[in-house]
Length: 221
Length: 415
Image (tube, rainbow over all chains, first blue to last red; front, side, top):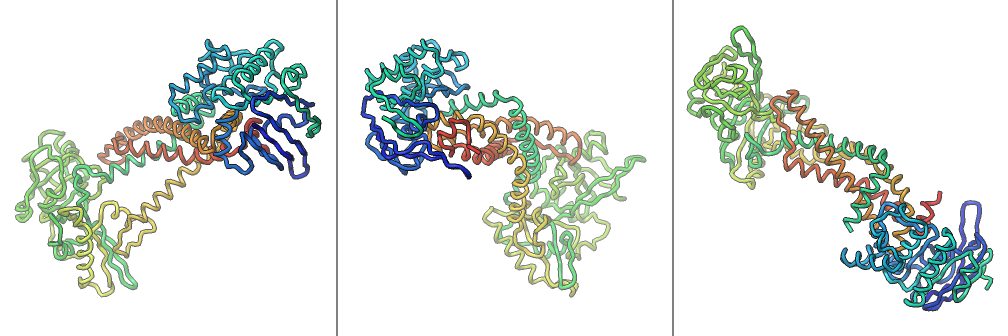
């Protein structure tokens, strides 16, 4: 489903060169739920960004669902992100000016479908995360846990095959964190969604099928 | 999608009222100036009585004689038109009349200064004046040099306190005229038909004008169809080359039949007054450059405000990109949002310009002006607002839309 081979990511400025990732090779199979762990600054989020085509590697190959991504143009990458990948961010990244319903519809805006169809799918996704009663609320009117559930609804509304979650429970208390994990496991088990989750939390990582560990930008297991 | 863009536009406008106020002030003030200028140009140039048929009209307002050492610019002379402009191919009617002259009229002891035009009978068939009283004088009146006059409504107001004037007499420049008609006012921005009253050419105190090739007269030809305009121009220009000029120090006479716009263009900077060729395109270029220069500063200002506004939305851009928005869709979104903003500013500008135009009309700054926001000016206003929105929206939108998603999610471009 996701193949990263010989991945290297180097950040360069005029004076300094920082190696964020070096020689990383990861294969994630269809329907897998894996976690990526490691200390702060070890390159976990960078790796997730490369998997999600939000950034480009300095070296190495990225393959999503059998297609090589290296060298693809903006429109092609946008298409893969829209169809194949859903994102969940630690800080939710909800658009504060839009209602819950409008936020969840964002991925569908970039697909050909009617407003009614878009709304129906968004309502179904919000129903699934238990927020049917909050359609017209704004993010600032919700708790952190509710905001993350909106973000999950937004990530899954387009039924992507891959879900990339960057510390999805990092900003939540343990109870809310457990709720979010339950949702992710449910998606993985029932929808066979491939999930890659970055986490600091060993307990959460244990709930996944496999853990990739990083240290100083290198894959340690 | 449009509903989504509109929701975002309104939300962003409400988010920072100060930025919004600055943007709207800049946009509405810029568009206000452009709309006032457009309304004035429309009032001066658009077809309306007494120049409703101006699409078929060509006039010679200015003439220029020049030689190696001399140049003489003025109106054409009566003889130039009477002898050489008659029977041009495609002309339905030709009128020869004087440019306006200032004369004194006495009302008891009170002296009133008025502008008079001396015309032939065809003048009233070429120009479609709106008669409030009576009718125009005829060619027979002109041939017989009868002292008859057609007044404008404003002149009737001055001379006869607005009372019916038909058959009454008044004195102007030492001559007594009998009123045969009263017409609606003509704004002096329409220089060709404008005057306070009109009398037959033949009432001039001297007939020396009949022997002059330069000075004091205008000719307007009403073509049968617009297709006839080029051949009228060409034939008259050809005839001019065959005229023997009275003074040997002059070798060339340039007095082309032109549209109103080309006539104005001939007086503009950069016009080649010694060429009979049309000067309109040069004026158009000059006006476009001036308009662009005028909008440059507010555009740069709006571009900067837009960049600040969009920078605040870096995270939103990142989210949209992460969920599949291609660059061109994001550019379209920000441009559409900006066009909404400029249309809003345009609507404000339109309301303000209506007040400014009303104040201009009431001030008497331009005599008898009646500047209005008509459908044509409104259409120009909408086009101006959209054009302004596109120009000021594309660069910030393009700059922000090309951010890499990861960069945008972190809050904007790394510096």
